[in-house]
Length: 44
Image (cartoon, rainbow, N blue to C red; front, top):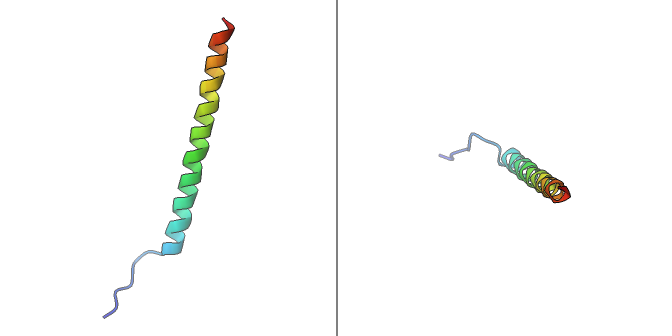
């Protein structure tokens, strides 16, 4: 008897790639915010 998975591996891979891209975008946004805060503190 062949066991068929209950999920679509292609869809799971696409979801994983989307989550990875969102994570990377959030890291970039945080880096920009950190740079802006540091620049603001330098202005004082």
